[in-house]
Image (cartoon, rainbow, N blue to C red; front, side):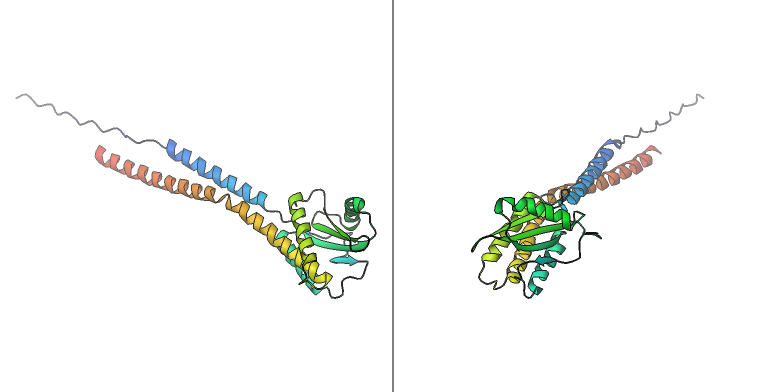
Length: 226
């Protein structure tokens, strides 16, 4: 009796789609996370005024005796320090020619501070009913020229505001207003990276879904092969 040959069934080949898409999605997610970290760190302008050998620890120098009660002034300057990261210093004086005020502020900054963690504001009375303002930071400071102009504009508006009945109130209000405007600009800049956060989250979810799919596909392939 002829024996019937039994044909063995061939094992099905693993039809996995491979891990290349997973690697690509993972790489994109990591790249986006790195970009987000760099973007957020570049948005931050905080600088710390560490121990400065030249700085005496004060908030202002008043050669004209304009500051009687400095509570409102120091309060506004502390608010500026908390929000912006630079410790402000106000110098009130007279007699510096307007065209020489910026150079004077530069020299005074170097005479007062060694590090970059300060912001010097100079108020110069010149002639009758005239005054000038200048702002100076260290050469390596992250405070932009635009931010310095925001500060000077805020100081000018607060000085002209009749609700501020003293120099201390006016200058303190100016520092507070400037800090709020600068902070608003930072928040607007951070908002521009929000879509990147969303995209990174989507890529992470897709990567997880692809891992799950590949795992289920491998399980089914093994079950069908035996």
